[in-house]
Length: 216
Image (cartoon, rainbow, N blue to C red; front, side):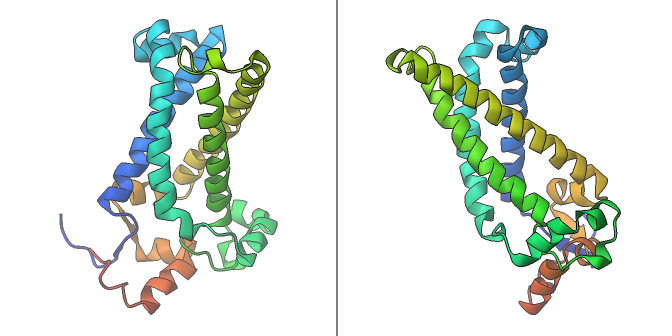
């Protein structure tokens, strides 16, 4: 790969592998979960070898995704604390939508939308794991009171709906903001992208003296 002095490393190979592992398992879970949720989506069971295999594999894939997400959460926990600038960013969401980024407070490694999605995922994936265990046949559900199983099914479906909606917005935003997809496929972004979309993070790299080391 040719060296380009205008590129900054945003994610290393391990970060990207972790992200795509969670992304792929999430897609499998979302589609197989929809297949189990309503007959209209039953054709998605073909992805995992039919109805019985979908019912068997869905919870195991869920455990795998949870493990992968814990790794991701530990990596990025420190970059997702909500600040006063984030609250101001949310209040000025009109400027965000209309690309008037010069009116917004400087953004760190993640903007407020990304941070709120992160915490939404922390809550929802935790709920999905707990409720998924409670309704997991034939291992745990037979030992759980039927009222608790029914409640767990409802919470599981609601948490899944919230996180699926959040991920759809996440994908749309990644495509909408040109250059974002590159960060999670190649690991790098341009100086111009960093200055425009994550100015506080860009300045932090420079202040730490790591900006030069992160160039490719």
